[in-house]
Image (cartoon, rainbow, N blue to C red; front, top):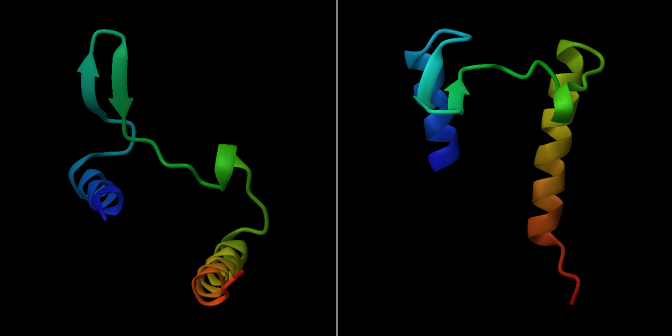
Length: 68
């Protein structure tokens, strides 16, 4: 919940590319990843819906299937 709350706070309070925090060489800027891990993407908007449904099914199965 903390992670998602922080993401919402940053998205609603900062502009894309704006610096959020800087301390010496440590710097946090607001950027958005248009794809999946490491910026990979495929299929445009429909792929986001497919992946979202896949994640929901995977979480449901992991929560409800016992290996023991």
